[in-house]
Image 1 (cartoon, rainbow, N blue to C red):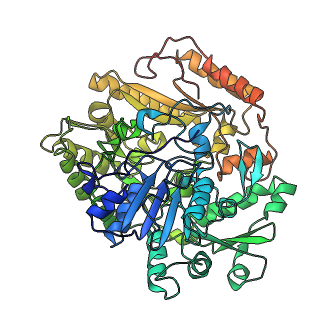
Image 2 (image 1 turned 90 degrees about the vertical axis):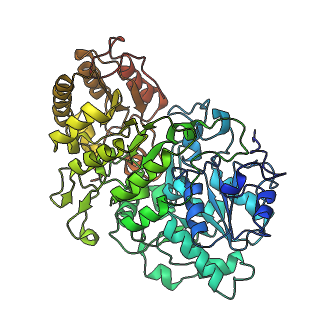
Image 3 (image 1 turned 135 degrees about the horizontal axis):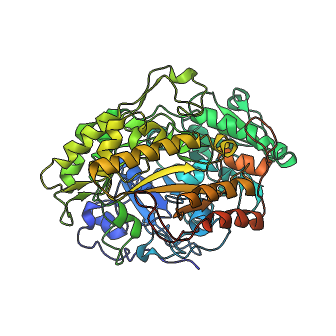
Length: 601
């Protein structure tokens, strides 16, 4: 059943003027009779840069636009999405920080009992396939208004994709939602360009119309759009993907489509197009990533770093990240099961040390400050400052780190240690933690980095992601050989003894990955057993939309087209999962995994 959002309709509460408006009263307090842009999100509104609607809303606001937010609206009535009135330019729609199906269901399709992005942690505040539902509500509330999809759900479902929860191929979410434009990836540049085009064109400047907007907004970097059966020049110039019907007829063709989309997302190919039931979806190449100066400006915007005051219950995700700092975005790893590189880009975009220090200094002035920066990082903590010394536009690699570290990949991890030490030296800062996951293959390149992490910046647990031990499975994952993980463990043990600290490695492991057999799981379980480890972070593989690993699962093939074994049924997947969960008794291992029960998904 739908859950109503915060009680933000009647009045602007204390402190609300510092936030983007959630209510008409807050708009009126600013002297606004209408918004320029309305953002509808499946998350609660937390004014923190880790929340997508807040990040994009503040970015648009900084460029002179009046932006309001409707957070977690009811989905059985258009009343909530209409609360702030018809926006002048467009409505943006996002499911929130997670794909809504992933937010709702476990790897075995059981309902999750909580939602960290909702007040009180309650599940059920967003619908399944949220961007489709929210778009429908906006069509009811504001006929003809241009609707723009964005966020991780839209980004990873922008083309025909395998849906694990339906166990079926689905069309582009752009077609199912009947939206006008889809923004994929990190959307600052695309969203701003959409607003500028709608403002400047005489056809749409007064009252944008959906049909006119579709014509006007074609070709913006980082977007997808659609048209009907009639041939158009933009489709003729695009490289065709296997069609929706082609993939339905032969699931192996999803791999070809996914790899082509991946290459485009990593800035290698021109426009793409995909036909589906008489219509064509077109995908413009991505925009250039933000520069360091732009990243610094973005994160210096006036985020309040807390939930909107209309909320009466704590929001777990907000509590967790309130005193964390995002140092960079993008991931050079390109793991086949991960959406990060596809969504944020493979090119690491780092903030300057001065920007990060300024944010930390601002944290110390927060009334709730207790002295600890809980995390400084991004998708991978030790990629801050990484750059490519080659020609990015001609590189064909899906990963800078696999099958081996690219010689053009430049990373000085000692700079990250210098940054952390400078943060720790700030007045009012007692502790600085590096809690994001660390790439152990990169960390091995700097003993000084590992030594400093162990002695100064790990708060008890260090998160690593070996994922598996079987060489064949690791190759399919695009992960380094397991011997690399073992070498890191030896170094970690040495540095723990040197520093006299008792720390633990928390390894992330995946069961039932495409290509993984029961025997592979037994061998991994045996390795854990020999070390007395009881796995704490075990995830049964979920084929999330748009990833290469999902194409492996759906088509039963590796990237090169070779057939692979796939544990496809829930029974087969659960069997592999239990082989790992039951690896050893709860004996634990000092300086490695804490002796806690294993956590199943």
